[in-house]
Length: 360
Image (spheres, rainbow, N blue to C red):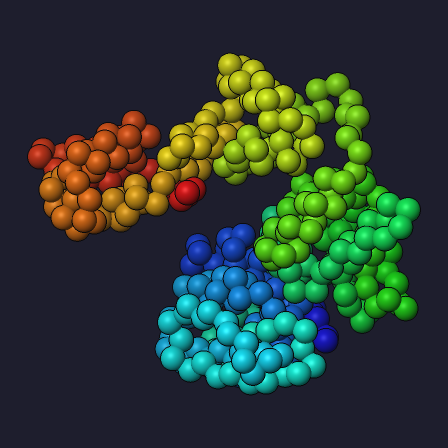
């Protein structure tokens, strides 16, 4: 497959296409990487996403629907066995099933046909590929489409990205993160090995978009013998890692340390004022103090979404079908976070520049 070439695309002018903020997000950049890797990037008439993970197809549909609200999405399901069942939970009217005995597992093709959408999508892709801030997300999407992991004798651990020929975009991204690689013409793939490179790949969560590849990546990564870091390496690296909400178990897994050891580091960093924590349901999420993200539960987000105008507790409770005491507690917790405030007998949503993220 020929990969999207920024040089042959027309110049992108954000004002001309009235870009929205949601275009420029890690989610959209991940979809860009996935489309570049597995989509049909030559078509001028339709956007196509192909993958064997239904979770990724669902992810792709949700992002595309935010960008292009339409009803003519089509989903093609290819099954290796006509008696095999797959659970499709998407609001797509046009779903077709086909038999493909060459396939080892079911795979899916998602399509939206619209020349205008395709033209705008190409401009979005071009703009995102230029921004280095999205390099990690693009690579996650690309790996979800064309990546695999090989293990063998003598502790061989190789991460591969399939491609007929080297492409400039992937070269730029890997060099940007100082990841050493070689391109095998015989294997028709990029090959990355060595635990220092695997550490850099773990830093950007390269496999986390695809559920099966994610599981295998972290299993192989954790099989390395315990790292012997220089003094304060983990402590200093955690500060950069906490640009997004992380649990202590996530951090422990990343740095291959016990959870108790990580918790002691987190506690010390919190005392020093470098990080903060938020309680969501029964879990603690840790963040850098410089982060503009506030993690909350799904219930609290539902409450906030109702506060387009001041509402009383009983109105919220009736709308969400939950008891008033629970609503009152959630509102007071949101007030402590600075996200809502009481206005007379009702509650209203505050305006601020913080990003609210659901973490359940």
